[in-house]
Length: 254
Image (cartoon, rainbow, N blue to C red):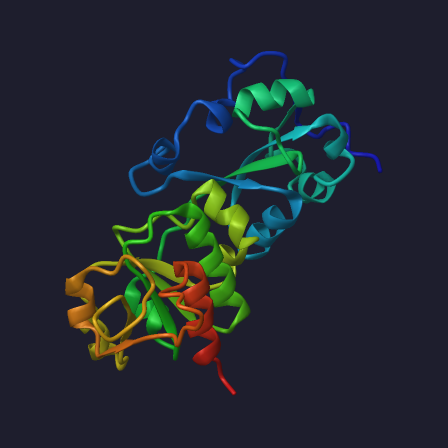
């Protein structure tokens, strides 16, 4: 496969090359506010997940990849954006030093964060929504999104005390599901959802339920119901991501 000679391929030979700081020097929090307060960036790994983001309308800013992927796994993405997308490339060793980890799929893409819709818009045509409260682990967030998309949930709302779904690890674990299912941040209380026609069920560890760990007492009290998953062999509860998948399956459309 041949890439156009006009393609902006930029060979880097040092960790301080202008433009690559978005892949190396910025923390997740700094990426969120890199351009403007409400228009930050996030990093996506692997060609498959990058393509899912592009198909969902997310806008790329730059690509970082190993030499071989320019005419390999990243070629479709590079060709799609012609001269508008800078592509930084270098040796596998240099890129590992730059990012601090081995690029398992060889390709990273920096993307613009979208302007998120309001809760009312997200929920307007939804029948089954997921509310994530106090889940701070990126792996669990990614797994919940993947299950929510796979099992037909209509939307995801996150309390501000939860991990960012566009965290690099969350995106990777979700396999791009964060781009497939509508989501936004939720302020206020669960009782606000009743005004939108929803009844809420909390999965929580109480005297008579087995839960997803971590729900605050206030959240449980606000819910319309408190539900549990029957357990066997003396197991008291499931990991939050596993419990979420069970709940999504139970709520699936017949």
